[in-house]
Image 1 (spheres, rainbow, N blue to C red):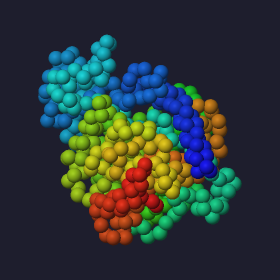
Image 2 (cartoon, one colour):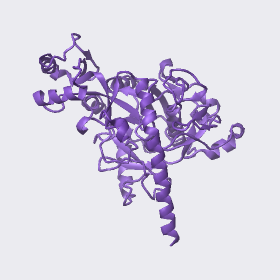
Image 3 (tube, rainbow, N blue to C red):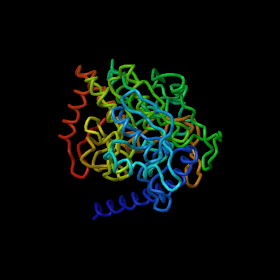
Length: 441
């Protein structure tokens, strides 16, 4: 009887949390779109249904370089061609500027191109999002210790979850974190991230660029909705693999979106540092679930040629089976979220055969901005200024898996691909019905 009662209480609690996140979706998406004039949400009535199928940039399309001439001809025939020749990206993809008639929207134009050229020859330039930012994020940052307690290193270390592991784990392993950037000076209150560095000065994150609960680009003294995300992710990797070399790449603009075409350029630049592992907690849904063209070509032209490198990506937080890219690619390690004890899949986690593994993603505790936080819907102020918070989402199960790969590499001498494959075999050996293949820190 008590087990039934506990299950009922858990279910009721999840329903309350789900309703709260649905309330956050409309104001959060509206704020993001206001700060990204070229980004659109589809379908057009998303605010009524409180659901977004995907985000896209309205003034551009993507196509493979080899398909460029026929796509240009089709755009001319449709009256959507712009005079510029297009922006050739570094991975065999061209971004084309387009003009759409007033009676149409960019997805309608792609529909016309599908009928002329075949599905997927030209695709939208999708807007990628942090899995903890839009589309019903799992939770908002929550304080776990007081600012006064943050001066006690023992209290801070005891609060971390997962805790700091074997200090030799991850030695000589390079991890690239593609995220929001790195908070300057965070190692002062989070010493376990000492040595984590931004790729360039442009990859340092400013945590206060927006006025929360408004549409203004202005500082208000509160951390932005996604502030500290890259630092938090880096801190999780460092707890699981303390000796790993972590470099942070900032991909998001102030709105919280990352253009698909720009994102692969950023990853291409990151490859110059020869990372073993790329950890990415961003992704997107796509029109008709067609795989992200930019990432597919990135794999074909670069990643597949590099042998041992592994991309680890978050599966998304909408509790759906719809593919979330790049996590859904078979060559990517797609990570879903489960409870700390692995007994259940997280209520928010996407799932399905395309998710490779589940790792804890609830109530993860790590470094954050040294600022207070104001909640999205009701504007409640949370004193997160200790710089250590609890956060939930597949965003945070992802760096656990990245850290486990790094730790195994330093222990066995395997490359990242070999280590990832071995861990996935182990995860399938820990399969749990209702969850899936599982890994624990």
